[in-house]
Every structure is written in C-alpha cells, then in structure tokens.
Amino acid sequence: IKNYIPHKLSNKVSYLDFDHFINIIEKKESKPFFVEGDVGVGKTTLIKSLFHQFAKKSASNIKSRIPFYMDLTNYNMYHNLEDYIVQQVFKKNNIKVKSTESLEILYNENRLLFLVDNLDKIDDSDPDYIIDLLKQFKELSEKGVLLIFTAPKGFFCVEFKNKFYYTKYLKVF
Image (cartoon, rainbow, N blue to C red; front, top):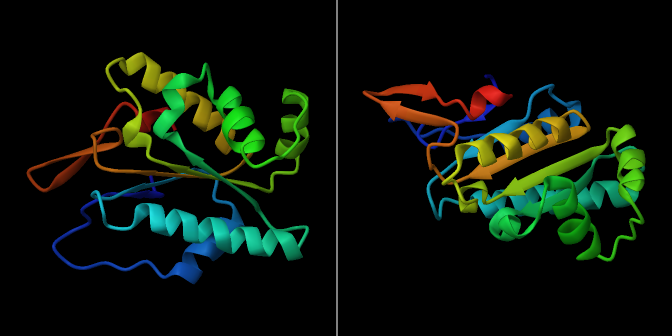
C-alpha cells in the first residue's frame, strides 16, 4: 500500500514537503492516504492546514478540490458515514443539502477532498463495526480524495521486531 505513512518510519527523521503533498492530493491518487502519528505530533494541525489551503483554492478556482474536514470524535452517535456527513459536515457548516441525492451530485464531480481526523476515537470493541466503517470510507474514496489521520492504535499497521505488518483493516482498501 503506497499511501500509508506509519507513525514510526525509521530511526531517521523524515520530512514530507507540504507543497509536494498538496500536489499529490490534487492529482488524485487511486488509493486513500493513511497518516498515523503519536498524540501531539501535529496531525490535526496538518489536516487543518490542508483544509484551509484547499478552502482558499476552491473559493477562487471552481476546478479545485472542495475540502471537508471530518472529526470522528463523536462519530459513534451516527448510523453511518453518509448520515454523519450530512449532519456534522454539511449542517454544521450551514451547507444546505436536502437529501442524499444532493451528495451524489457533489460526488460525481470527483472534486471532493475528505480530511478525516481522529479515527482512533472510534469505539473499536467490535471489529465488524470498524470494517463496516472502513468499507464506507473505501466507497467515499472512490468519489474524491480521502485522507485519514489517526494516532497509532493498531488499526492499519502493527510493528513487530522492526517490521510493519498490515492489519485486516487496511486490507479493506
């Protein structure tokens, strides 16, 4: 999986150039991006910076990606991802969406950028629940660009004896 950025790359310090990252996002890779990082390293700061960068671009360029920031801290209150998007993303930002058909119109443009934060806050006591959510994210990634940011919780990768092993959750994608 080429777009997985684990929380511990190696003993070396690694940097990802912000402008280069934006260019990758604009080109629309076929797979979602997964960014894992320890608490406090700046994942939320990065994702909000990306949101603001793309919001400015989309305000001045009608062909630019339209960003949607999705904080999953309270996701467990919703029935599914589409319900969450309508309630938390659109209504919270005073975007009028009358039905799920309105979402389909936006999806068909393939200009959406979904910036998902705090996946680690999801109740992970039921693995089937997590797999179902990730399958919904996979469907979403086919309608735009998807970036998922999380603290290391073993959702996507576990490290054992300096090797990374992908979990069944990442295999959904």
